[in-house]
Structure formats: C-alpha cells, structure tokens
Length: 200
Image (tube, rainbow, N blue to C red):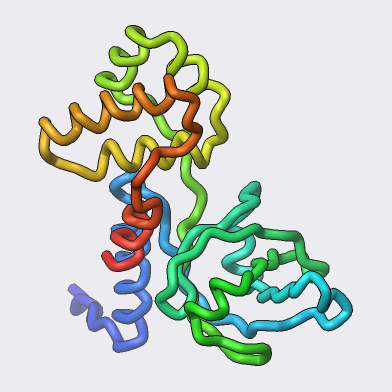
C-alpha cells in the first residue's frame, strides 16, 4: 500500500485561504461585502471651474459595483457617500468632493486607501414595520416612493439596535417621519452602519 501524500500547506496557500475566509465572513451574514483598495487622486484641469476630482477604481473592484451609481465607504478613514461614473477603461470612477479631500488630507497625485461597501439587495420591510405601516397609509405610500438608499437608511437605523424598546421607538418614529413627508430619517448618523461594517 502506498504511503499517504503530505498535506502540508505552504505560507502562500495559508494567506490565500485566510483571504478567502475573510471574504466569506463578510458576506455570510447577508451584509454587503467590504471592498478595500488603493487609488491615485486626479484633478481634471479641463473642468477646473467645477472643481472635479476623480479616482479610478481598480477593474477587479469596479466589476463588483455593477449597477451601482453611488458608493459608500471611507477614504483615508474619512466617511463618504459619492457618485460613481463609468470610466473609459471599463472600470468605474469615484467623484471626490472637497469635503472628502479635506477629510482624507489628500491632494492631486496622492494615493489614498479606500474601503467601500459592495452591492446590497433591496431593503426588506420587517414584520413590525409592516404592521406599523398598516396604521398609517400616508407613511406607507411615501415609503414606496422613496429611493432604495433612503429606505436603506431607515431600515439600517431600525436594525442597528438589539434593544426591543429602542427598536419599537424607532419603528414608531420612522412611521411618524414618513407621515410628515420626511424622505430621510432625521437626526440619524447615516454612516453608523457603514463604519461598523468596515471595521469588522
């Protein structure tokens, strides 16, 4: 009988496996994948009057952003939400505004570190929120008219607590704000979910 072959795993294989496991961990709970990369900040001098600054997202990352028109994440640790645009290379461009540059302490030609959230499904209406909508047709009607991003902000706010009493208050307040015509949750840190996600 032949001797069993060695199953020793080399250092490179271990690193690659760790990376795969980390990616699986990010998506196993149904949350968005965190995409990390570095890119160089460029200013378009031909559009200087509009103060246009862009960075090109690597193709491997851009391929995962199919269908997304906005990105949410951090640039050198500074939280942001910004528009995504198509690039001639086939990848995507991220528009970088003044607040992002200032927060990142970056200038033209600098290489910055980014972590952005990958695609997410349409936010589902939880049972308690659905029941609350039945008591407020006005809130339910506005909910259907909201953008996916706005609905996601409300759902994230409700889901970010494990306290039943706090959750009940947030569900009630969500319905109240929608009935008042507020398309976004008031007095809520919209970056809370993202920051917690990228730091996991």
